[in-house]
Image (tube, rainbow, N blue to C red; front, side, top):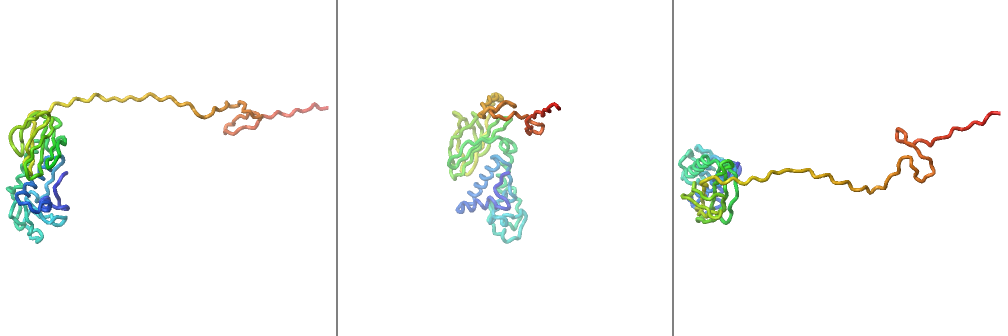
Length: 265
């Protein structure tokens, strides 16, 4: 799961205000929309924390980011400066016309109509300056989608490598885009994203040759470095008679010659 904020860390509206203290409300709304575009269009399952779609802010932390959607009397919440509205927490916040709510609804509709933007294979394409771009490709239909996001307050023209030859604009602009030498040149709007869809499936990639494994032949045994042993019962240069091993592995005593008895007289 991916998220921009939660009840423990704080809200995206708070982070935007802290990072951009001199930004106007209009700029903060654009930055909130851009944050949601990155969350919805890149890899992961997006999770919207209740109230972020209504422009909630707060002081942050695990206590000052739990504002309810229904009217509240909590003093810590009543002085929050929310994004995109003059409303306070003294009234309910179920506004389906709020600009953040509308932008999230549009992203939900876009990813529902084009599932590859939600679960397609992601390939990093470009990351320079304020622009980040990637492709999402449907694994079965092989349709490529190009997503480019711009964190700058000015439009940015960039050239991005792609696999497809021609695209149409789905989001953030209009018109067709044609690739040249495996690249497209596009202008990404300030604090916004651009989504292009290829006009036809990408050609299938060549199959890799089948892979097989073979067990290597056994290596010859190296000659032993130990000196040869004498065969059992052979002479070892000792004057002692040979000994044979018993069942218990202990050497037996040398054989004895029975004594001879002299004839009686």
